Length: 372
Image (tube, rainbow, N blue to C red):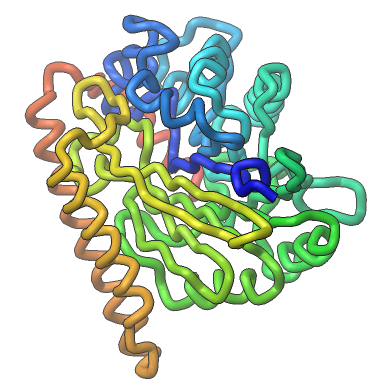
């Protein structure tokens, strides 16, 4: 059989925020889309996506028009307009994860409206909690070129923004493995998206690696991770592929350059050869928030080499001294967090005149009171 007729090509990317960070309300992603049009944000990468059978990403936030035109910060952060469904359709996305810790920021109404818009735009919302008494996550099954791929998504990050019920699939080992077993003999490949780990660090923890291996051992073929906001390594484990985090893809968090460097994972699935992949380097433009392909062949080579080094560090890490390794890991996370806070402060000073300070302080006070 001709390989071209028997392979599925996935273009997988990381976090997509069509709303705005609290610092950038009024001049972040949402505002750029309003001023530049629905085709602008993804215009530099659309040609890549046009060749793919599955165009996948993590939708970090809702598409929801609030009833009143509120100027309060809490009503404007991480919220894209409902019309932005056209932005995603124009870029050829057809599978988007909604199992993450920002999707319930506007409650049940915002969640359901977002899911409805995705469905109406022929974009599969991935990660909806099932209620059939069988699956934990409602699977999305895609059939192309005589192959079938089952896709699942779970968040392992506790939702701290909604005090109500969680409508997406919250990750628990036994439930995820049960979903894999239910699908294993019914499809050719199983792809799982996971919102997991800690932010800012460019390598997964020992616990995350162990969990990922467990899922591959039980029949998963590809794992696509998110939440760290930075690219982490990719591991070939047995016959499976683990992308621990694909980082940001469209975001207005531009003060930390580590969060602006990312990749499109070009993943090919075939009965003949299993799973293959290559990385396409991308950088987020600090002014327009567009994901842009890396032009220079030398810069491209360096980006791929950096990704390879991250991947090797996962494979080569000595895990014998578990407690010390865990302590060192969390100390590094703490250092990265302090560094990020400093970068944020410098960004705020530089953009002092643009930040809505009073609204931001009111929002933070309200947020802290809700989390107590």
